[in-house]
Length: 322
Image (tube, rainbow, N blue to C red; front, side, top):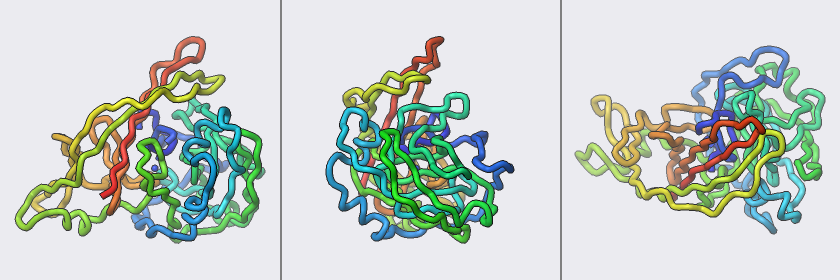
């Protein structure tokens, strides 16, 4: 459910597509990527960005993201914004935001399982691999040279051959614009809860007076599986299987100065302790992003790659709105 990221055992923002982040991923620029530690908060949801999603017709974005080859009725990709900013997998990068983006089902297994998707039709990128890839946004790490990485035209071509519109890449290094969120409850929708991470003040509002723990709710964790090959991509997903129903909550820690996330009997550490495109916690084997009124949980597991390139991918996911 998480976005397709570059970490083979995870966010899946994926974030989906399935994976997470990878400090060793290839930088799109000739120079090394300049990591940012700006600490800035994500902006609130922007209805203007979400409007195109809300108005979408036909197969869902998630269906077309994975199953465009069999559906054959998916709309062309639409770019609503493109910008150079922070927090693309913990560094600066180019974000492309819109609707109708597709996964090719192939991954660069020699580079942290970077997902292949829409091809960027600009000489400055000229690639179809991304650090993060979902149905509504993708990003690739670059350095912070705004004179080079903004002001040019961005257009993408989906794996099915359909072209997007063209937009000019803006310079938004001052703070990342909001990402589109679908507000769905689909456990494998990597865009279901892309809202800013829950703040400590928001977390404390869940506690009763004098309490040292609070329950957010129960997450219904499910999984599905597919057979893949590094050269030819992945087959359709299997039917969804129930994995477990697990309570998720909060607990005070650090002498009362910190709020931790809990999943079942596991203390996952300080709420939102990690920030790679989205804030998240590693809870047991899962990646969990918690916002003020929703959360999404994900994990991607890949078997070892056989001599003929075949492997099995299993994704786990859950979404809870509260």
